Picture 1 (cartoon, rainbow over the protein chains, first blue to last red):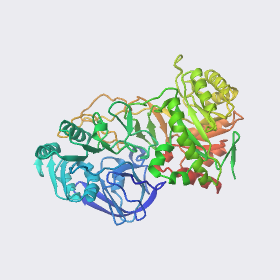
Picture 2: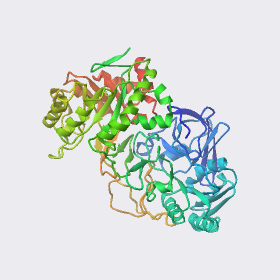
Picture 3: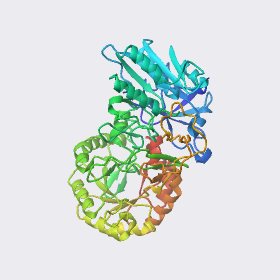
Picture 4: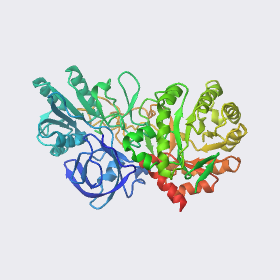
Length: 266
Length: 325
């Protein structure tokens, strides 16, 4: 796990790219540590963070690091609330507060298993940096609500796509594609991130077929470094884990089920 | 210039509020930089109870207007687990943190909570026996199991609890007052009469939030196998169907902190400082040196930072430097 510098850093926005319904926020981070795939950062704009509708946003927002290369970090944004809306307004040259990289990331597959990357919606973000690390010898399955969101699949290479409305790729759920892949060859590790119901379906499917799975969870969190104890999910066998420091990537075997609150925004 | 507080010499006036900074988890996240850049002049542990607690079911957070409502439920390993597992780590961490303060010690203050005077006494006695612990803070924002009243909200009950705790230790005893009472200054006086060496305030203001509802049909029919909304602090997503508003937090109610409570904190700190002769630790919505300065001007000796550390764990260092200028 890469350790974060102590304290948030002021970074400069280098660009904001449209990607269908999403945006890719790019920031210069020449001095930041190299993140591990699956790690995240807490982000807030340097200007006008707060004081919006209902005097929000107040807290920084947690984002998977979608890509990091040559001193530039990328984050995938979808406008789902006051924080993501404000972040989406950033333009080149604007300031961004960032704390990270934080949390535990993915671990590489062992004993000759192939990697299946299964992402849904804005939850595809950490799978992009994972694919960068693992190389192109990965199977990438992505699910989206509609065609505009499915354009997000361009974040990864050689992705097969499912959409809820059939406007791109397979008309149906990501888990339809995953079931077929595991049917074909189950000597694999499944890496997944997406909405909680999708993650739970992936978890259950992998458990039934005894396929190891690593799930990148999301939870509402105030700090990202274990201070607030707000982002907990139930641990199999009792007790809670903090998504920020025990995760965000958890071995599926640690969970009885994926908490309905612990997925990416839909 | 060091600051004197209950016989302890501190490098500066800024400490953490209990339960707002898990130094052990932060050591994992930030590595040795946490020690070399340790932001607080003293470190206050999260609340320790006699028995281990898992804490409240999620959701535990709600982003309020310029603030945060939390309903964490005091998860901790219990007294035995704290002393066996956490205390050695916290002691070595605060010892290493001297380097961040020109060699000045970073005293370890252990915060404890009981639901009876006997429980408080047991906890304080255990802390008294540990040389790593420099001072004890009593979290009295807890219902008495017999009366149902918050111990810290009732001056008479509070004084009895502090008296019994006082008898267990000669270490500095700090009472963390609850703001959820009719007359916080009367409670501070009761703490002083019971033998407290200092009082700290404010704890969070009791608050709640309702889960968002809507008449609009869900856009999530295909993927949403569940009808509840996301638990993100980005909580704009409505649930699948209209429903009777229900509490959002798993614990039902929570405590409000952050800039939203700053003006309340200032009033309560001023009221308390005017009525007691023991030192006051002021806190509530402090984000900048100017906010800390106001609390000091109102009578606080030390200032604690809590929710602001969530956005930037190093903020206390900047506040302390700002106070020096």
